[in-house]
Length: 267
Image 1: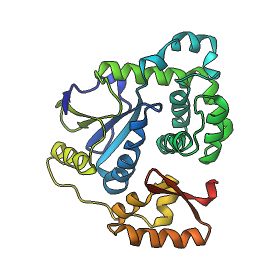
Image 2 (image 1 turned 60 degrees about the vertical axis):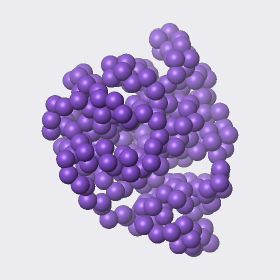
Image 3 (image 1 turned 30 degrees about the vertical axis):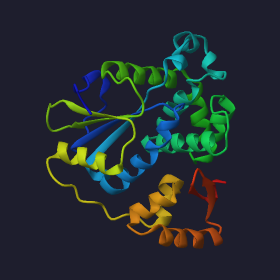
Image 4 (image 1 turned 60 degrees about the horizontal axis):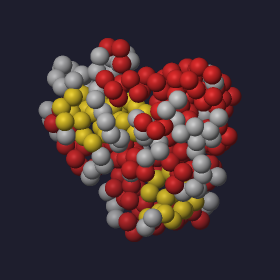
């Protein structure tokens, strides 16, 4: 954990009304970053009323090569290692939730389907699967605005001296104190503890939504995530999920020793 200076006004959007703010630095090309998605999903379910979050693209130096030239010439529309990050920024133009759903689906395509997510065709296909306005996405994706938004993320990473992804940087918006950076992926309880330390009090968990509403929000979740959110054991969680499987409301995808459950609507 490292102390961080508060971001400058040039990197902030409007002042949030919630007391805490999270900057989440993610590299779409980094395997470890996929493991951070369940953490962020659960934080949103349980403690959303305490914080706002902003996903910042932090790609490798190799992926950054030639970006200024590619933006000027329009060559970012060809396959490029930075293209997934640009597509995520384009999806965010339709709202923060749209951007997060795009990010989650992109990781599913890469790790579960083994697809090449650095091509425009695959990224447009992903946009079509998460229910956002596809025409608007294509227009934003092909515009210079999405690429410049990605460049802004790179600037934020440099200004805040974030060298690695995944990383969280936590701020309390009610005080001008330094933020706290947590690099890597840790147990969920570590992130909760940091939030409570910055808040100065214990947080109250929100009542989780129904399982159907949860799938509408996030599309895909693991058995472990669902068991943790509803405070039930794995067997109970799987029993409820198998009911929905028989009703053809979800599908089950075994992966790396666990099971991922996805809304049938998105298949």
